[in-house]
Length: 79
Image (cartoon, rainbow, N blue to C red):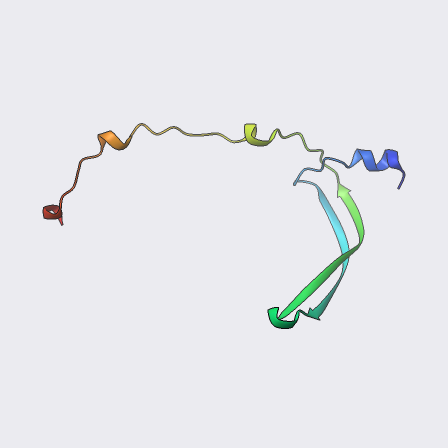
């Protein structure tokens, strides 16, 4: 892949569809037990979707009307 072709895939959306071939092997991690090593061998992008998101701007925040002062106080007699 040339540098120009690589620049096309700099920002990839999670909706992109592809396949990956990888080599996985187990190893002894000593006192920590065992581990698994995963090495990607090749990647094939089937349907590329460029990333167009803007980070935190993508989220919608709902405001609530209740606050701490509106709540009634409870005492031990309520239980």
